[in-house]
Amino acid sequence: MKKIAFFDTKPYDRTYFDKYGKNYEITYFEEKLNHHTAKITEGFDGVCAFVNSNINKMAIERMHERGVQILAMRCAGFSNVDIAAAAGKLAVVRVPAYSPHAVAEHALALLLALNRRIYRAYIRTRDFNFNINGLTGIDLYGKTAGIIGTGKIGRTFIDLCRGLGMKVIAYDPYPAEGSGIEYVSLDTLFRESDVISLHCPLTESSYHIIDREALGKMKDGAFLLNTSRGALVDSEALLEVLTAGKLRGAALDVYEEEANLFYEDMSDKIIKDDTLALLVSRPNVLITSHQAFLTEEALDNIASVTIQNFDEFFAGKPLKNEVCIRCAGN
Ligand code: NAI
Image 1 (cartoon, helix red, strand yellow):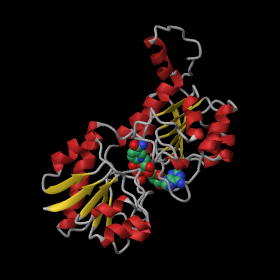
Image 2: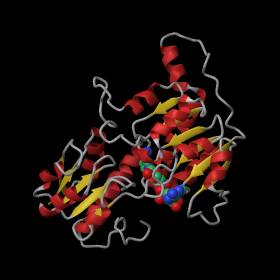
Image 3: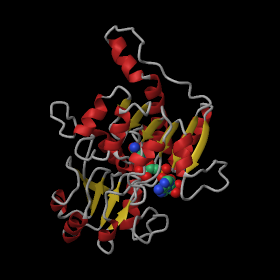
Image 4: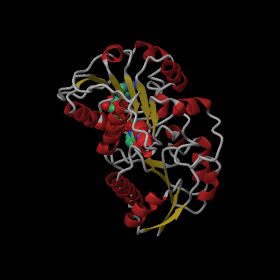
């Protein structure tokens, strides 16, 4: 039986990987994968990791030296893997799509909750405070949603926005032909959107795509949603415009410095990240802990596709979901 080292394990991962991974000897580690923990991969044939692992050159070299042949990311994004360093050392695979609905529906949940301040209302009524001051929202019907990135998740979110009766405009350097989507420049999208939602990958060109300048161009009273990757948004600049009262609110499922915070219970710790602490404290900011993917259907798909990826590799078959510098689509 091939041996798999599974990093950054949470109870819900085991449920689904135990179901599909019966032909493998899986050892579950709670630690994230990085260049320190890569030392414990001795004797494993494959490694499975997740979004907040830091899989740099040294981590890859350490796994390679210890005989690991394949790194299976159980997520779509792979901006945390040094793909160039893996060339010729480790095969890298991922799960390109497991449920665009999971992420798009979470983005919608964030938008609705943020607009109508549901998270504040819930806390008030639990305390028998039935005052509704400060909870005023806007009708989303007839407003404009600006979607950045019209891949699987972006297009699913567009359908949801249209279901609300919103007008949709979008920006993508590779527009989806024949999709009926109205593409505009980024500047136009910033100027005209009442809701801006990010659905593009994190790359060198999209890093801080929402920076101080972009935020400055946005409509007063716009909403910003980020369910993609934290570093798409310059968080300090976001905090500044929120403090200045320019935006109506922001909902973030991802945060650029989330790696050592998200997925952990930090409630008895001092959070040293002042930007995050201030964002959390704002009444018009709603933060969730990178949970947009977290549905039963998505977890099931993640586990089955990851195990298929291992199966293909160990059977010497072509890898459908390989990530490499020269792979098509990467
Ligand atoms: P996809 O690959 O189907 O679509 C991405 C789209 O973004 C493509 O159309 C591409 O042309 C476009 N794009 C690339 N660079 C761009 C740029 N600079 N500006 C605008 N558009 C750009 O990916 P999918 O499945 O729709 O996922 C989108 C993102 O969602 C992922 O990259 C990932 O970061 C994030 N994600 C977040 C999850 C969560 O739990 N919060 C779970 C899964 C994905």
